[in-house]
Image 1 (spheres, rainbow, N blue to C red):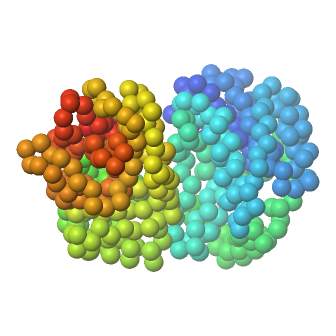
Image 2: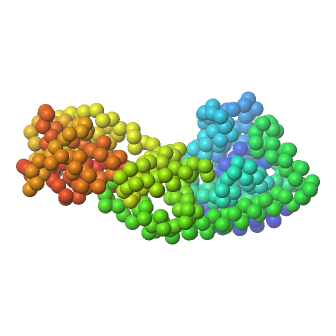
Image 3: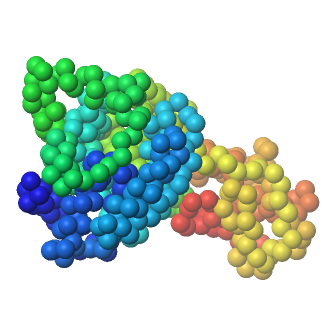
Length: 439
């Protein structure tokens, strides 16, 4: 048994043999105990990265208080250093999800660049994940279940046991007389996964003995299908990813025209791929918001609200605004020392290039009716100038205006179309999250 599992583990971890370190997520349960024992044994004969274990203590039940000491005892016997991290789990509707989020946040703080976190999910877990997500109506990405590898912080999360069944792990633990902790909550059928594990899968296995293996294999097929969908999305996004005419506005954006040329299904596939690192993806019923955004008239400036932000359309371009974008104050800000940059609350930085005008100066935001002296054009309405520039509407309310008393002295100019008049100075604004300023 050991030689077979050892060979499988080494094969699944071949890509990460040169990693700076391997960290084992060690709950003290059966799965992680077998994984830890296997790797500690292999370290005696193989040239592996330095091993360590990480135990996350959630503090959700009294039984868990003794698990850190058990984990320490196991690690001591194997010569593997252990780090115990206590976390606070927020009391929300899904306690399972909250505990998982807290656990992976703790893991993210442990992992350094290119290091690997190894977790003990196995084939049975994969089958449970597929069926659980299927019952929730997940798409291909969700039904691909747990990937063998994904990025975590600056390193990697790897699941080397996904091709190994729970029965194989149990047989290994019995053979080597391993001891592990049993989480009492794992027997509670009120939790969805426990219900599947204890009520549904035994019934399925009576009729289809290979149900778990078949479901895990289906997850592999769906994972391959998702790889192909991602490749198609990258191809479709290449044309839509052309740079905007506002390079100083470093927000994710896409040209709408190339997306319109795709079928509805390919549009959704491309947008799912683009939005995946930015926000939680919408469910099927919520995609009507995309159709409204896409089909609106050019001057409508519609938006589509999602879980973690908003998708805005300005003309023939769509822009992603994270929820933090709205966290700025439009209150007047005094600028006592214009020789130094001014930090605007939630709105980036403002500075003056050249010799600053005499004060006292302050920064205000648009109220309507502002006019500006434009060299060679006389006095012009600021709203009209902004319309001519094509500046996205969601930026205009954040545009800092420089005043001395009631006099509007200057506005950050737009790509040279109009400039701050007189006396050899220019207002330069670097909006929040932007890589380049506007001057």
